Image 1: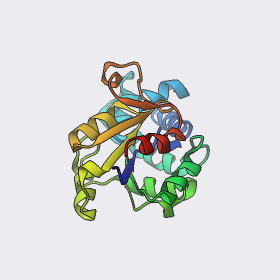
Image 2: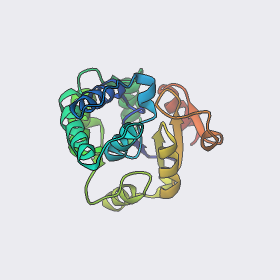
Image 3: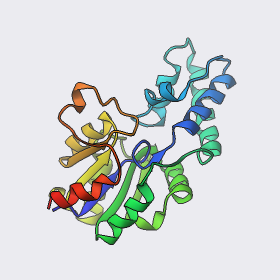
Length: 219
């Protein structure tokens, strides 16, 4: 029986993409790149942390190392400024999390977003009291899909892997769960490539409200 539910954040609990794209586009302008990413293009930039997002955003353009660093610093500052503007929970998330808590599940958030930004947006857009543990990317811990953060939490709370379900929306989340040795499901309303080969055998849910029923059937 699953007792501990580990959630990804962006694309799983929160739709953050509008604010991410806004910060990227303003930061491109700062280094003289005249291009505006749209929402759909932004989906391909998500995953593997903020540094990788910056690398992907700059890949189509000829940009020197100095401007790359300026862009990355600008992005972090602008995202902190804008990250709570338009971001919001996906449909059914807050109600679903509260119901899961009432059912006795322990809830956790593991994100590749920088830790200080993760804590800000969870406090602003979700009910932080619902979670046993909330963490984003920290300098001393490798980002997902490396299992380092997962292993840290397992050790901290003395958890059993067979009692854990990891819940995300992307291939990175599937790889993270595999590397961590736990079961995984993905929500198809997020930012993942759900037609990809890596997604073919994954358990997929289209609405957050389906999670409780899935867990009841898994008992």
